[in-house]
Image 1 (cartoon, rainbow, N blue to C red):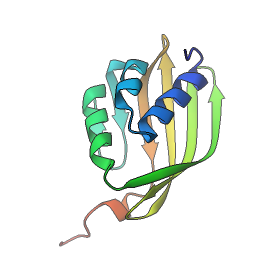
Image 2: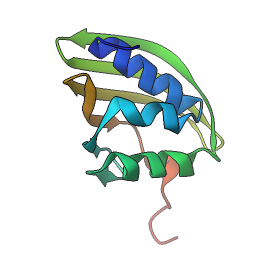
Image 3: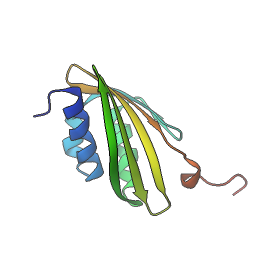
Image 4: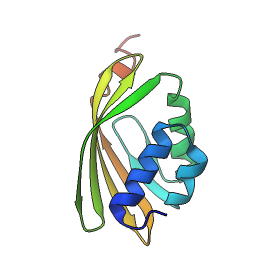
Length: 117
């Protein structure tokens, strides 16, 4: 079982990228706060529901690296989708053995409608 912040984030991302949301869910607190360039969520179930919707366009993820400092974990990867291959950085906070917040950074332009569309 995952116990360090790094192991918890690794287990979460592996489960999410494989579409195993039932395995990811116990690794986060109920009131997980997510903020990214497109969405913001204050409940883990809302965040996971949004990730499930992305499943139709996601082809995979190519890991680029991970940096940890205390209870903070930064994850870098290339998200492979039907629309674009997007470099992504995610910043996780882990407290009490569970993920409490996620901040995602990526160029959202390929995933949004152009102005006036």
